[in-house]
Image 1 (cartoon, rainbow, N blue to C red):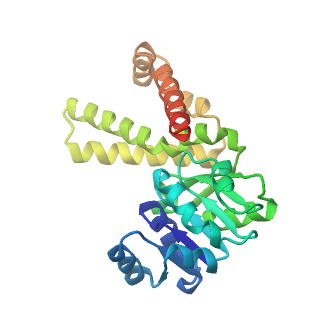
Image 2 (cartoon, rainbow, N blue to C red; image 1 turned 90 degrees about the vertical axis):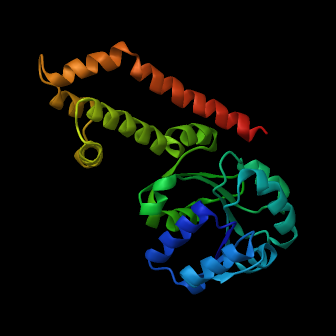
Image 3 (cartoon, rainbow, N blue to C red; image 1 turned 90 degrees about the horizontal axis):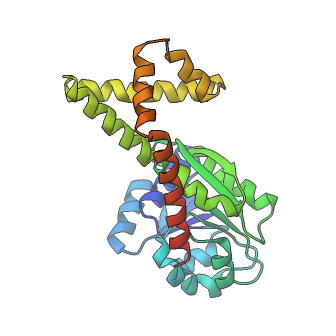
Length: 264
């Protein structure tokens, strides 16, 4: 039995993904702060809705999906009811495994996860890290839960803030670039709908080539960049405006902000 505690947007996305992958609703349990939210999840997915304490007592795996600011309250509530062997998976941004371990009984294995919003379309990037009591078997259980909704990568927990900045926030950077490219198309006289369709398909095609070809992005970019052509003129302007440096500094800033949030 898997229980998702605090089934908000990310928790529901994970729930729907594992159900689409073939797990039965009878194997799942959710908790929700508001009664109407729980009723909606029960009606939509056919899963049991329980109180946090009941879920902690019953489920083999607990997925902590509450907002980071609500984590302390949740842990205080469930701690007396979590057996030592229970696997705890946290998808709360910025919360280190040590924070959770200190508030649960000794020996509880904790796995920290940072996922992103493409979980809604089974294309998430989820990075996982083991806490001090989590072994290989616990990482494999976490991977089995997350792999139906995207790709899973193991990293040291010391890199979780960097992963949050790079892939957790990553979709927003792409949406931002798409906005700018669509605006450029409109400036050049293109209808908005046509510009958006072209940019989206270009992004999907480029990402697919990058994933499936195994080529370095520099090689793929050079294949589009003809001598004295249109693309090299565009690249020159991007370099002149410091876009590469701005991207690096922006992601570094996001990493630093993640550390600030984690530190309270």
